Image 1: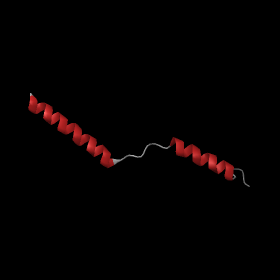
Image 2: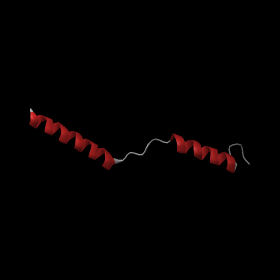
Image 3: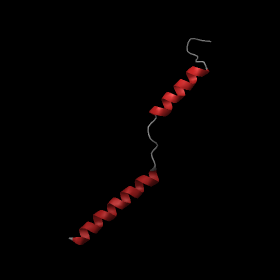
Image 4: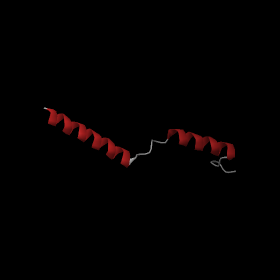
Length: 49
């Protein structure tokens, strides 16, 4: 094996590390739904005044 090659045990450790430390996946649909709900609440509050 070369200087930087990993055995199967090392590869599993690296994969586990990256799986744990990857950022949460950005969900555009969920983000739009949140913005929409905030807008509707704000609009409703303006009507009440």
